[in-house]
Image (cartoon, rainbow, N blue to C red; front, side):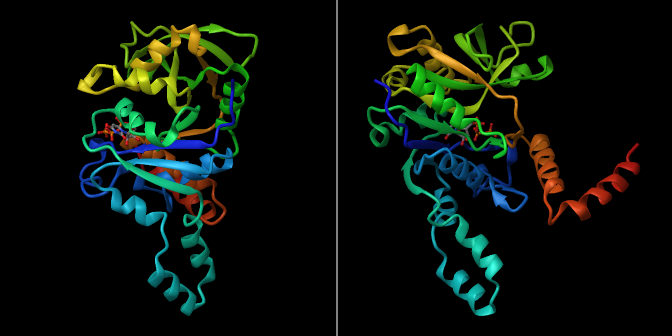
Length: 296
Ligand code: UTP
């Protein structure tokens, strides 16, 4: 039976090696995207989709994450004494946003291993997984659509994005069949980071999942795959072939997504989001135009 989904799991225990040295003492999920850490956008997205119970899987630098969602009495008192209520409001936005729980991953043995750490907390119900590497524009809801499909099909749901063939080697890629819904495909197979020649389609998996709890039992026996890590994609591959647990379906996302997982895309995300903001855009956009003139 399909049940109501209330829990979100946010893995944030990766080493973030692509951002060293910024991530030497801080999780990459804490890197600011304009003026909010990536993780806050992700928690807000979960809450907006009705998921108020959030489990963060943390690694060695978990303090910054916990502190960000906690109260900071001295800071609040100082801003209050100064009468800077606008900043006080910004500071308090992340406090009390959701019911946030934490679990340690210990060794970062891969995304699949991080998800497995959520087993105790999640129990025997479907749940969402959100990665801080992908920011989904709040104007283009994706998670709601995925939850809707999960409830309807009682399957495992992934988010798919059509990417340029030159970028396909960076993603988990799905073999798909059409369904009776224009934005939903059935996933019949998955491959992690294929070469352009071997990619079965241009449908790349992005960092949103609504998983059936059987994923835990599968992850427990999933051997380390690509890069010596326990890959979520490998478990999904098995789930795709198993009708008894509903198979895997992909919701094709055509909205705005900002990739913050690697440096160049992170920079693009900041420029794009800042130029759309009322408080920053009017100053940033003319400067950008002038700056572009100076580039050969
Ligand atoms: P990535 O592979 O993109 O993250 O994992 P990474 O390993 O931190 O980054 P690089 O490649 O070294 O720069 C995708 C997501 O899964 C989490 C990461 O925190 C990120 O949100 N993750 C990954 C874990 O929580 N644990 C892991 O063992 C691996």
